[in-house]
Length: 283
Ligand code: SAH
Image 1: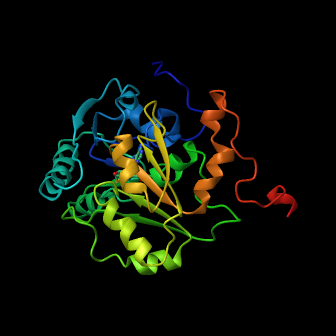
Image 2: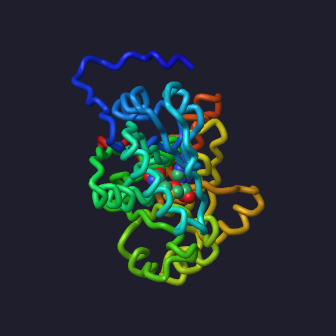
């Protein structure tokens, strides 16, 4: 990869020794990094990265030491403290530390906890937001996370709590009633219970659902299904995490907006999947 892409003229911030920059890497496609992320990758002495960060992104920091801090759902808590303290140690050793996290560091990513630990230890920080999988991953599947004809709000929820169980604290009935579109992170393990809870709360078994795995990467897979059939369909398709699950009518927009399928030669399946009859801007 050419790592010499020139950043446009701008007073780009300099990483100073002893600082930690907590940075979102986006959902996978390196093109979805921000310019601030690229600027940080160029300067870091050490990059400490998660399982969800694509290796190709690290090629933008050939000078940096790489430290893998991966952990996948269910068994995180003990290690989280170690990671935070590792960041403190690296900063105290005078390194320019780039903490690179999948998506956005403050969206279901424990970025807030790490940042808090750093500040509590007197380490100066900078936060670089990233494109979250629940927005950018759906966009790569041709699903607008809000669409005027469908939803005026969207709810982002996690399918796991700290113990790895379905969050008991989540009021699925309220979520179901309050939001036309529900975007679920880390939902694969407990999808049967989540779907049952939404149906029990009044959502139709026919409600469209999309499951987007390894979104924005070359391995991206998209399953279009319904609340009633999602559990079997995920199993039959052999889908594995990481996945974003989107519940709601906006999933139908993929029939017209599957831009990757169209680029591969598949015509749009339906130019007006919501049955508006004419382009929205004329309505
Ligand atoms: N901070 C991240 C989320 C971390 S939680 C963000 O803002 O995107 C981890 C969960 O994010 C995964 O279990 C999955 O639900 C989702 N996720 C992250 N990257 C993904 C990707 N490329 N494709 C699908 N889901 C992804």
